[in-house]
Image (tube, rainbow, N blue to C red):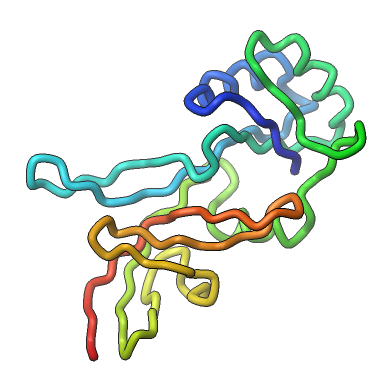
Length: 169
């Protein structure tokens, strides 16, 4: 799995261009992961999808050289991430983390539900169940959890949906 950088807000458009212009068999899957969060609009709670990594696409390919060459033909800003002129795939831990929270073909992190007992977060259901150690911050009013992940050698903070349904002292 490799990472393509693009312009924030253009992920959907670039994803379709990559799938159309590069396509199979070089590209097995191209996606930008999203997460579900509850938002209040006019006093009504709605489920909304937000981009997990704005400005980045993930591509699964066995022929990354062909993908890199074909990206030059895509009429949008695309840059395959790497170092010293070589393209660096995500390591197994990074791929496992993405695959644990999402499913192939449906790269959406659903909202999790949990409780707080004596200042300790316990996620009862959803994709964050068992991953409480990754949570760095909780915004109960916005129903968000901030996680710290390591991706491409960097530590990045991402937000995902977490609804705290109960808090006990």
